[in-house]
Image (cartoon, rainbow, N blue to C red; front, top):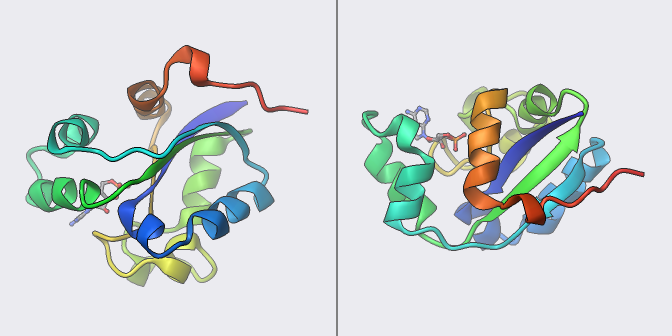
Length: 141
Ligand code: CMP
């Protein structure tokens, strides 16, 4: 069993899509292990996305991620990291496959509805960034 960190970004919250997107994750077989509503600030968003700090889009990314509340969620499933990335689609909705969450709901590469961990090491860091061990709840039948 593998875990990944999803974040429903501020555009997802603003568009009242939290329920629809979580419903899709559940339908795809993911179990929710932890979830909360948080408002990032420039320090916390900058720490979370530290890997991108030299990238030209870093400032805009932090500014968008602090523009409203977001919903970090720990999801669990066999092959969760890769399967989740298939469900959400490519970073840029213009390049995302039909039926993916980003193709259906995202406006742009910047405002792309959700985040997902890209590897087991990043998932471990990202889950630990938002949740303590005690907040990770067993949710398997
Ligand atoms: P996310 O999966 O949250 O990880 C980093 C984010 O940076 C990415 O989704 C995009 O929303 C955002 N981003 C903005 N501009 C770019 C870009 N040019 N290339 C890649 N990611 C970008």
